[in-house]
Image (cartoon, rainbow, N blue to C red; front, side, top):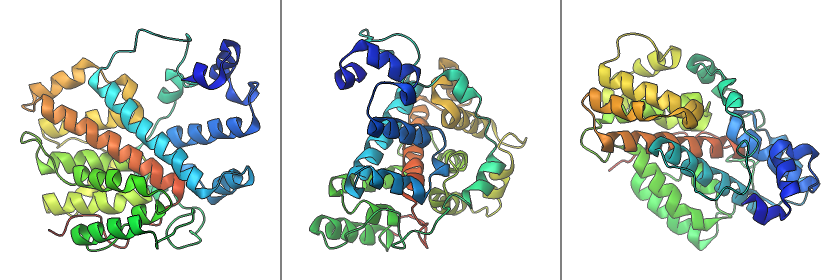
Length: 312
């Protein structure tokens, strides 16, 4: 991809080494900084980062395209890592992948308790329109159709959908993602395990927006209003069952650095009575939730007054 973008192998290697000193445009340098923040610490995004893009001529519709690309890549890369997908034979350059060293990931020592507290400060500036930092247009036909579908399922229109009103092609994907995150589709993965994986993921991602729904879902399927706090304080505490421990450990490993997943993680699912389908579903829950959380953080989404859970 980089050779196609920059043409010269020399420039590609400069970008892989340090995009900020490479012989590329200032806009491309800004794009690399923005992407790095999206991947590594999306919870630090602020309205000033949106304004920086606007100052460089990036309008809100184009920003949403950036977010879409980064979110889809998040899902694809994490799923590929969890699935053990091998690298393609054709490798145009050698060395580290897109400027990210494994040591960079390992240096990020997350604690769920800290993540939970930080999420309350994830929106450093109020959204100008009461929804997100980006412009919204709720008069579009595509938006009204998606909104009607959301109201039929959830009883309201999530701010997530409103924020993408300038990019209607994404509606179907977002609505489908919400459904996949709401309940397991494979019999070996119980609703409790599914909800635990989702909740721990959004804690690691420090998403104020995602935590509203993840917390409500966990309480709905378990009937335990204290389970969220227990999870947020320390997911390593004793008392989890063997299958819960396996799911939580795997979700934490994926959320902190999916490249570290090995076949031992999949084998552990089998050892505790789960199966390959359950493993794949947890991997999808973590990757989709991470993509959504980073998107919400990057756009400054204001949490909905209600969780995005089906009323059917």
